[in-house]
Image 1 (cartoon, rainbow, N blue to C red):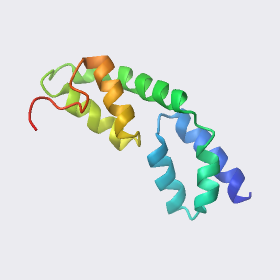
Image 2 (image 1 turned 45 degrees about the horizontal axis):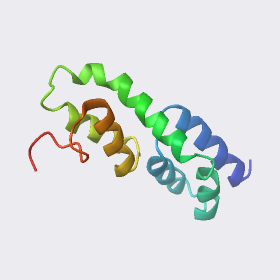
Image 3 (image 1 turned 180 degrees about the vertical axis):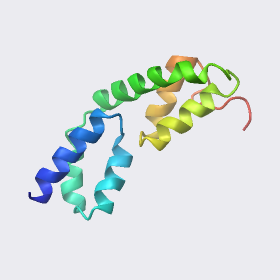
Length: 109
């Protein structure tokens, strides 16, 4: 399999499991895929699709975080960042779902 096909399939499969562009980029880079092929494979992920996936992932995660409402925003933010979503996407999703400040802080800065 050529690197371009591998990168496309990797992005499709991992994005379907909820991984964001930053994590996908890091994983492909660690596997030795060239930067231009990574960019090409990631270009298929549209911004709206990425936001929708982050939102869906957060909604599934949220019930487990409600036990500690004082930490829900920070924990949700950290979870989405670890999954590879951009800070702007994470801030928007946390704001939409919890109404927290855009940075998703729980009060401590």
